Image 1: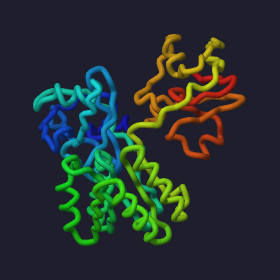
Image 2 (image 1 turned 180 degrees about the vertical axis):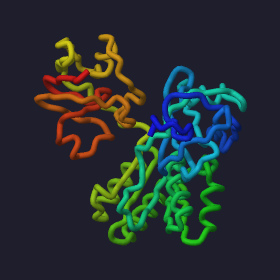
Image 3 (image 1 turned 45 degrees about the vertical axis):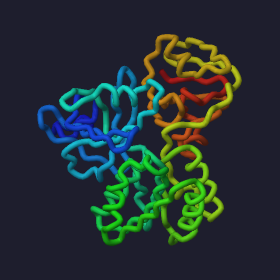
Image 4 (image 1 turned 90 degrees about the vertical axis):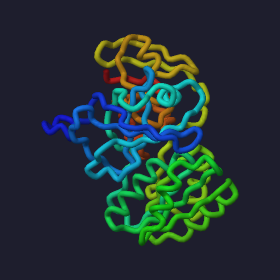
Length: 322
């Protein structure tokens, strides 16, 4: 679609203007981005994200609207206090400033066969979940949403409560870990056959969500989630990779990724999260063994063994098709 002649289909690298910024909580700021020339923006699937170049980094931020005929792209950014791109956005961008973006891209889209939906959000994870909820409300479909948060740190709480006032929308606010576990266990056990569940939030919430869904008998194909971060990984064993186009052999030591090895050797590999959660660095490969350590590829894709995410995954005698 990015090659479409209509400007509203553009999704490649381009510049947008900050139309407004609003503090949602002490650490979360909401940004509204528009085309600087007033051109239309591309529609997007619920749960999509925008890649923003933030102080030399490329970070992905979920869009919060339903994606239909957007007049702006709206993202909410948590200040992490680590000096990264999100802090840069907080400290730097003001209305009128220009910023480079890519997308929207979809990594957390609704399943086409879903009959009922349970939405689960924790903290800043409300952003893509809110997009799903708004899309279902627009389509006149029922919504059930569990929102776990700590007092004073809930972004978009007013938006969630406004949705709760709509017909067909049920919202469960869960404050604190114990209440979240109790609510999730109850709601996962009380869904109709054929339902799909979608969750986004911190790692402990997602781990609990997956565990409780398994205990309730949910098939993994109906348990969807989007990660902002990934757990720490072991260093892994050293291995050798070969670049298919040149025959160049590269030694990848323990604790060093194949992605970093390829970049150090001068190969241009697009990448973003370096944690195996965004999928940007995905490469076609052939190998005697692959150790997939990402959270992007499906089980079928991992079994096929012809692609890998070199930022985290490893293996033996890997041939990279570059």
